Length: 204
Length: 202
Image 1: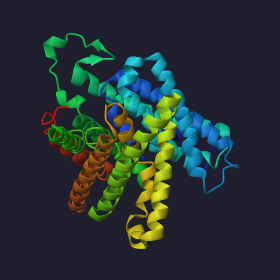
Image 2 (image 1 turned 30 degrees about the horizontal axis):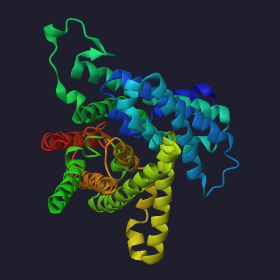
Image 3 (image 1 turned 180 degrees about the vertical axis):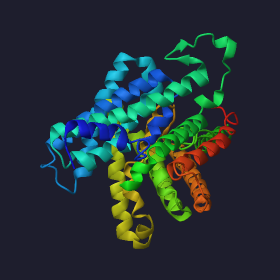
Image 4 (image 1 turned 60 degrees about the horizontal axis):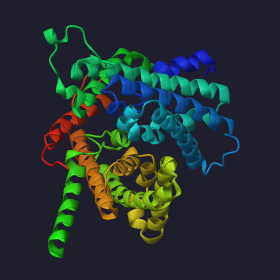
């Protein structure tokens, strides 16, 4: 088990990617990916919270009593989520109105609790920070990829800009911006990436 | 006059319940509670256990959080603390229920016990409390919103559990087995539930 920062980073980003490897944090993955702009804000929030809560929990890991560690972790995570919530509200009130409840739901995003429990409570602060960053980035990678497909197909725009020569070839695929589209997209992504990396997981 | 007012109030409760359970299903339209759903829905009986626990906790915490928000946070001007307050209320409530059930009904505790801690981190519970704030509900309506939301989740997870029991034996492509196929099933179910939208407008 190597704990070099680069190895931990790659692991969180790809080999142990939270979304399609560990199937965590699905809820928000599906809900915000119909517009790329919403997705980017959500990713910022998740990276910020995973990295800093991992760091904080790791700093005080020796002082948290075992029995109450869950509630301590939830409180630390909730404080960071509140900061993100206020920042997004100040920077982009329009977007906040739409994704507001989902920002609050970062608290119960299982990726964050999972990393805090599995990694930060046993490792040193700096390496935990790297691990949190990596998991946040791995999550964002999938989110952005899904949003890049759903927004053009559903609205004919990308980041709010209209696609070139839209009226010539584009036909609105409404189902892509509705809930079922999200489920099908994520299913195909999981299928694709899992079959790509299938041999590796068998040797584990 | 009083009678007809009461009638329309009861009507609004029924509407809130049905719309929260079907047209606005937390799992299929709002994507909440997916993680525990994917983890637990392998069998019908475990799905039922978790579903019942979720109905009970969502309904009670939606009502509790409504009271806390309206009578404590708003008068004190502390709305920005709502996230942390709600999660504490939910965690404390779940802990309390666990203790009460353990004390008075060991049988129920054995059936429900393992599911209760899972509920604290179920985003459906916190989600329903947060969505409730966007709507102009009073106390009783908030309770019914939570009840309907919980019922919708219960319905969805039982249906998924039933289908997953059936497909367990089928031969699937390697990458698709597990979460992949479950997501496709949920997608198809969610298509069916989209059909409910337009039935009720609030």
